[in-house]
Image 1 (cartoon, helix red, strand yellow):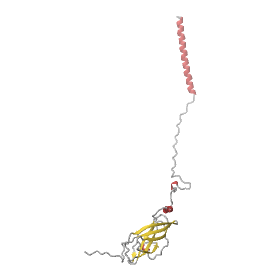
Image 2 (cartoon, helix red, strand yellow):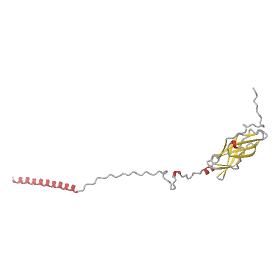
Image 3 (spheres, one colour):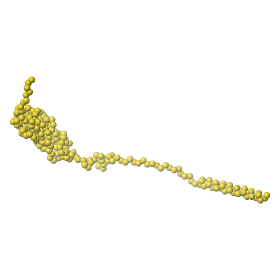
Image 4 (tube, one colour):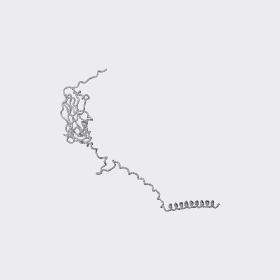
Amino acid sequence: MVRGGEDDQGRSYGWVFIVALAGLAAVASMLNQHGKPSAEPTRPVPILNPIPAASPTSSPHPSGTLVSDLPGPGALDPTQAALARQTGWVQAHDICPIVTDHRASIAITFILENITPVHLTIAKVMPVLPLKGLRPTGVELHYGLCNDRVGSPGLPQPQLGAGGTVLVTLNFALPDSCPAPYPVLLRVIMTIDGQRRVEDLPLLSDLGGVRFDSCKTVTTPAD
């Protein structure tokens, strides 16, 4: 009887010891948590916006000129561009009323225009006559329009700016035969920046629109 009581009492002491150890462990854990410094809150990492790249055309050149305004490596200045042409420096237009005595002489006057963007000098103007027939007797150059061809002094070598014009008169002696089918062409010799250029131009395909005494008149029979 006594032995059984001793066993129960020993088991009771064992449980008490286990519970006491658990309590001590809990207290130690609480003390450990309170002893640690609280962690600082995590700060968000700032996001930087990229700086936009400067446009190459908006960056000023060191001399103050925009890069986009600078001429390209292959660009030609206007004078060099005009000299590089094969043709197309001048043109003839606005033929004035033809002056003739219908028998011995004829004068053909027209406007010669500089169609380049640069300055040029007219060195010489001469008629070109594929069928001969007419005999050139002189060329006159004047500034002005058709009404200015009489009485104004001639120009030896007129200088024309871009779009400039000169009045040209070609004088001819008429042949004994009818000159109506004869064409009249033109050759212009000029200089641009001291360099010689030659241009051939059409003027009149024939003289059929002019009355000449040597040409037979075709009469229409009356009805």
